[in-house]
Structures are given as C-alpha cells and as structure tokens.
Image 1 (cartoon, rainbow, N blue to C red):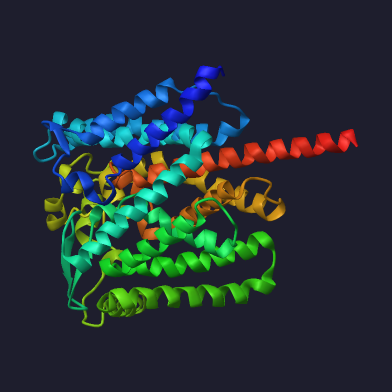
Image 2 (cartoon, helix red, strand yellow; image 1 turned 90 degrees about the horizontal axis):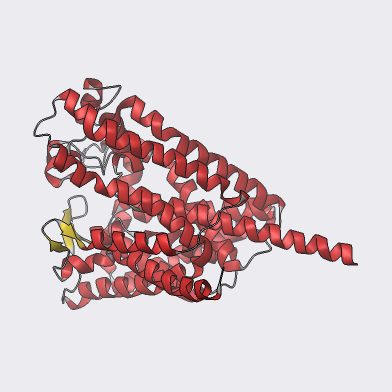
Length: 456
C-alpha cells in the first residue's frame, strides 16, 4: 500500500460510515425535513448507495485465510440473491398469476434486497479496517437523535417524526418512531450491556452507556413489550456469557444482583422523567407473561405472534414449495390490514412468500452463523484476549446480539421475509468484520509471543 492510499483510506472511511448512518435515516431526519425523494422514486438512499459503492470500489482490498468464513457467507448470500430475483421476483409470481403483478414494479421494489446484500459486503471490508471510526460516529449520532426524540415528548416541539398508537391494555398513547425501532440504534442495547457486564475500560465507554440509557428510555416510552423484556434477557445472557468465558462461577450471583439493581436504577431514572410510561411498561410485561403462559392477554385477546397466523398459513398451504413469490402487499401497511404481516410474523411470512425451497436456499447462512458462534464461544473460553478492548467488546456484543436473535424462534428467517430491510445483514457484516480483525490480531500476538520465546 503506497503513501497516497494510506492517506486516502481514513478519509474514505469517514465518508462511508457517515453515508451508511445517513442511509439508516436515524430518527427519520429525511422524513422530518421532507427530503427523501430526489427525482421521482429515486431517493436519497439510492444516491447514498451509489456513493458507498464508489467508496468500496476505490479502497484497496486483500483477503487471507481469516476471510474464509466471510467468503462462505458471502457466497451463500449471493446465491440467495440470484434465487431471489430469478425465482421469487420473476418465475414464481408469473407462474402463480399473482394479482396486479408487474415485473418493473417488482424489480424496483426489490432493489433494496440487492442493496442490502451488497452493503453486507461493503460493510465487512470497511469494518475490518475502521470499526472504531464507525463506533465513534455511531454512538455520538445515536445519542443526539435519542435526545432530540425524547425531548420532543417533554417540550411538545416536534422535530423528528413521532407516531402515536393507543395501547388498549394500558390506555396510553405509545410514542415511537419506526426509524428508531427498526434502525441501527437498537445496537446500543447489546453494546451497552456488554460494556457494563464485562467491566472493561474502552474508548467511548461513557458515550455508549449514555446511548444505552437513552435507548432503554425510548423502549419504555414506546411501550413495546418485547423490547423492554429484551433488556432483561440481554442482561441475563451477558452475565451467563461472562461466566462461561471467564469460568468464574463464583461471581455469577454477584453479577446477577448487580444487573438487577442496574435495571431497577434505570427504571427509577426513567420513572422520574416519564412516570406514566414506566407504569405502562409494568402492565405490558405482566400482559406478556400472561400471553406466554395462557396464550392470551388478561382481557381475553389472543396474541398469535408465538403461534400460527391463519391467513399467512393459508397462503403457505396454497404454494408450499415455492411460495407466493413477489407480492407488494407483503411490504405495505395496506397489506398488513389484509393479513400480509411480514414484519410481525417473519417466519410464517418467509414460508408463505418463499416456500420450503426458498427457506432451504437461505438455510446455509444460518448454519454458518451457528457454527461461527459455537467456535467463538469455545475459543473465547480457552484463550485469553490479547487485543484492544474496544474490538473485544464489539465482538462480544454481536455474539450476544445473534444469540438473542436465535432465541426468538418466531423471528427465524426474518432476513428472508424482510429482505428489503438492512439491519440483520448489516449486523452480520459487523460480526464477521469484528471476527476477522479479532482473530487476525490474535494470530499476530501469538506469533510475536512465540518469536520472543525463541529470542530468549
């Protein structure tokens, strides 16, 4: 790598990560200022994707043995992408005679699936060399967005888009933003909990913890039961994870108590700012436990999220092998009203949209992910970390993220039924990029250590 390349790469790193965070539209800033579309249906994310592609093309790239796992997943995703466009977008809906099917519309709407899998490749390459740049930009932007959003609830001065839905079982307006709920900011939860539980001094530690507190507050205000419960589950997983890696079972009870007290402290802190939403969260958690135990809320309303959704299951029974193929109703609010609820019932929707064969095409990605998680846990338990702690925390956070993701069986194949949404693919790229950097540096440290032994 020549001197000019070394000077150019940091500059391009910042451009790429800023563009990617803008691509996620944190807090809905483009919606707020009504600048999403540039020309016709060509919007700002199309432009950002083009520039990020240019950034990827111009950076020098080299692969070695430590890229092998990424290459396997990349090839699996590219094969899925080929199947996606040939079978799902074109052949299957054409054969099924889907209502109002248009190949032009299908290709236009499906470009996001193409973007997301290509972004997976781009993000991996950039995360390998500049993960710390991403973390720095991400935590500061996230904290700013969350402060702006939460302050709107107090001041009633709206800057970012807020959606309100009345939660019938608690009789309170749920204040939320789909741009926050479905975006990158949710990564603050595993990052913050990992830093707290593992007690390591890392760069941006306090900004990450502030971001974690703000995101936890957002979960309470949005009154989303599964997100509030996820904080508790993440804490439990992180403590068990820490115990497994360190092999120190003596501190298990202490860390559980400390984590419980931290949750109580966070809850009390939020209560002083948004008291009614903490009460709503408490009721929501009670209702969730009732749903898990009895399959319905205390008012008798059934929650089918953990079971079968008759309408979606019927679609699967109509086309069990190849699915319905592309149907725009799977990705619209109008479709949700009709029963095409891909975002709420991702596993069932994946079966209905792609059929058994489409699921099998994507299955190797999950197999690779399970294998890598197993290998990482085994390695981390046996070997002492010799890397910078920020990288170590980032790797642990994404291991935690995907372990939690895999515990939610009703969300299996979410990246199949929601292929136009970037967060899962991006998180997978973060995880694989962190793995590459971690194991590469571990091998260097081991080599240096062995060399020093020879010299002595």
